Image (cartoon, rainbow, N blue to C red):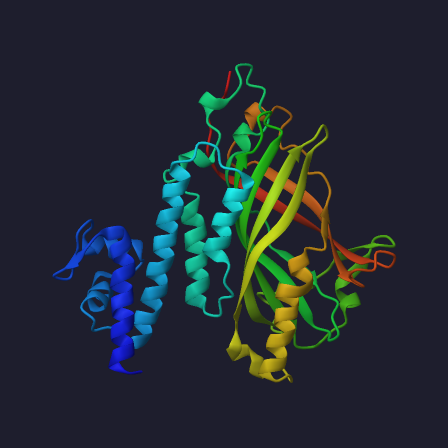
Length: 359
């Protein structure tokens, strides 16, 4: 790369940061110290010093421009959110679309997406995202108020896939879910989840029936002799991060979940491709079909989750929402001949926004 191109990146980097930290003179920004800015960008002081003195490499500058741009967007989102007392689903969805709608192909960018997502919902940054105690009705009849906060995936999920080629499997390894009350009666809850989904390949190319136990005509249970992490016949080919919007309805007998994917990215494990008898472009094409094709359309149906406790005032950290779901793995789109995997997806309440009890 030419010095001119690197200099252009340097000026773009400084210009982006100047939008939120003020004018740049003598290698300092007016509204914040270099150490503060380095911390917000997740850089060491020495790395940030190289960047602002224009002695960093071209690659470092490219990544720094992207990081600065994401930080500017995040700061703008927080400012909008703090000034909004009632945030509609459309506004929140638009914010996350702007934050995450990009097809990333590097691990650095995926981690940046995850960090930005989590930072967006920190309660000390965006208090107005949640319904507070002072906003509850006088009779405290508001079922969703103590369900608000941060939930995490309680169990990894492994699902075999029916494809033109045998051997592909999904593993949902972790997720973080932020929830808030979404209507005046407290019977609807809105949630935004960042889910990490891995795509694995069975080197033995075993047929899908070897991983299933028949349960009924249209329901089958997944069966794995060993976990992916310990079975040498499985290799991880890609990791995909998805931003998912959920609407939870508090029904008489349980909690109903309706979900839709907002955006998804993919990161390839290119060093693993040599273990397959397929060429890299072919493997990537198949992985993209899985990540952005069938699974992006969410061929998933979930039954009502039972209430963790009968009295919603007693909900506390550690309580779980357990959903029993069907994933349609075969003949997708042909509802007269489904072949489905029954699996459980469980969320555990990690950080509860309201721990006090309304009375």
